Image (cartoon, rainbow, N blue to C red; front, side, top):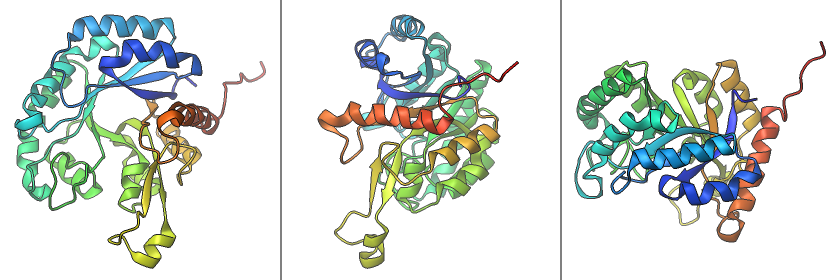
Length: 294
C-alpha cells in the first residue's frame, strides 16, 4: 500500500507544530505548502526538523509547493520566481522530487497570450529541475479565472494543458491534479484522468458536489451556488475509480487531502472531516495490505 500513500496538506511554516498533533490519526504523507513565497524561511534548517518528524512518524514528504504568479514578478508575487528556484534546489533536503504550484499568467489576458512567457520562465525552471532530478507539477485550480481573464494560473483547463505541454514537451513537467477543480467547470474528472494520468505527478484529495437541480433551474449565472468544494467522502467523485485509474497507470505518488474548503466539515469540524477522508480514501485504496498465502 506504500505505493499509494494517503496524506494531507500542511503549511510549511506550521509543519513542526502541526504534524505531531495529527500524525496519530494515520496520515501517511504530507504535502508542504509555502503560500506565495518562501521568504523568511531557512529551508535548510526547516527541512532538518521536518525530515526528523517524517522519520519519527514513518511518513513521507510528498511535495513542496509555492502558489504565487511567477510570470509577472509584481505585487504579492514579487519573489515567487525566486521561491520556485529555491524549492527546486532544496527539494532533496525534504526527501521529495516534486515541486508544485501555479504556472502564473499574464493578468487579465487570454490564456494563449501567456504561453510565450510560460515557455520562457518554465523552460529555464524545467532545466534547473531536470539537473536536480526534480519534477514540476502544476495545480489545476482556476483561482477565479477563466480562459479570457485571470490573475494566477493557466493550468486549469485541458485545452491549456495541450498548449503548455506542446510548448514545453519536458518529461519532468506535469500536473498536480484533483477532480474538484474540473467539476467546478462541469468537467467529468474520470475520463479526463484516464486521458491525462501519465502527466499526473501528484494528486490533491479534494472533491466537489454539483447541484444539478440548481443548474437545471437557474443555470450557472444565477444567485444560487451550484457547486461546492468538498472533502473526499462527502462529494460526488468515485475515488475507487480514481485510485484504480492511477494504479493501472503505475502511479507511485500520493493522494494528499486539501482541506479547509468543505462548507460543512469546517471550523471545529475540520479535522473530523479530514480524518473521515483519510479513512475513506484508505478504504477506496483497498484497505490494509493482506499478504497472499504461500
